[in-house]
Image: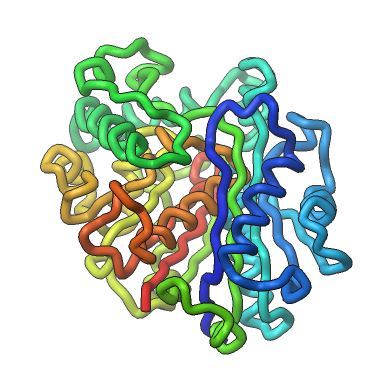
Length: 388
């Protein structure tokens, strides 16, 4: 199987970008990644674009062709992937498979979403399409309600980790303060986080991720094709990748305090990389809600089941802890531009592995993991990267 190197990365600032169009976001992040890779556009063999719901939110479908035109890539093949919040990671996964098959040598992968220009009701309706429309969304079910039920069940099966969930949010906000691309630059105290208004008990305002505009792009290549193309950065290779699915509806899952898709995708990625959870130096995990971060770190094997909250309380997941989680600020504070989120996670992992994260740079960053969920854990993509 061909080894794959990450040549370039680029992203926009995340946030409420009312004046920016989808085209603008694609052009900025895509061109940044191409320049960072040190290649000519004519060397790109294919383009993959992750996007969740621009057909509904922006009236724009056919995103692959739009992105290719915006970046002036000519007649190369384009593909748009959709897997709810895992759309960007699915685009990356498809590009990996295209290169590993020998079909392509160099691919450009991007993710983009523009959401904040629509009102809350419209955005809520759009996001709810990532759950079972007939059995859940039409009954008034929302994602905060879904993950609130998961949190309550977790409290029942293990213990109340409401304070530790608040600490997840606190760490995310502290990390985001050090990330110039983050949406939320707000220094909030743990006390304020814990006292915030409830959205869906036990989830309060600071337990929920953000509505975000933004784009992120990555240039990847077969390692043999990448040799000699660049020397200005540390070489970053894809060590392992996994992709798994699960039921769409929450009620269809036999267990809701552990995500089967994460465990299956993680097993694939660890096997392919010949690594164990303890080998991972840090991770960007899908913290759409703070309880999700705790569950994800357990499912990834970082901590024993029911002990993820303890790890947060003990400072293990903090920026200077033994297993830093979401040094970027995560979905919680960096932002959650749905189609771009998975690639934004990869952007952070590569930045850390290169040693380019400035004030949030980790002391040890040789192996990093990106974990991306779609919907109520109906889709999961995991990628492990190694600095050479």
